[in-house]
Image 1: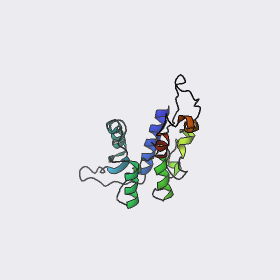
Image 2: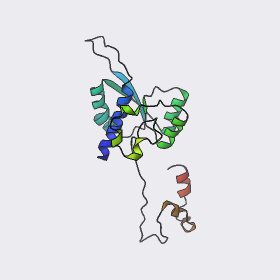
Image 3: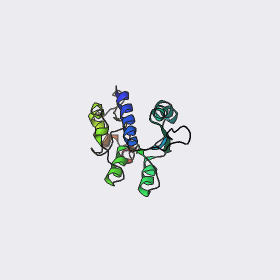
Image 4: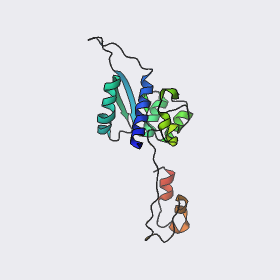
Length: 179
């Protein structure tokens, strides 16, 4: 069910973008030429995305999907500079919030996403009602080997206990950098 909800959110997000797109009639047979849809993403599992999501979507909605691949910073900076023709962008929440606060993204009409109420509450409007739903929702967990840990660790804040400083020297650096 979770996979279906996330796939549905992706398809609905792309469908919303296409509602405003028009196509040109191709010279042969009067068919409309596919509309180009540029998706800015990280490039993870591109083969699987192409086969299972992009190709079926292209066929059903007469679009040609072009991907712009890169990290969050580079892709958001292209939009800031006006050097990107992106229609749909996938960003982590931190970068998505920056783009929204800077007015870089178009606002959406949530009425065009009829199944949005079936998403998890946290996925419906992660950066505000004016912007799209989350494409994924993730949680982090903390696992501790109680046979090895002499100091009880029951929450993330316990990682800053002075007695753990020697055992976890990089924790502060990694958490500050978002790693």
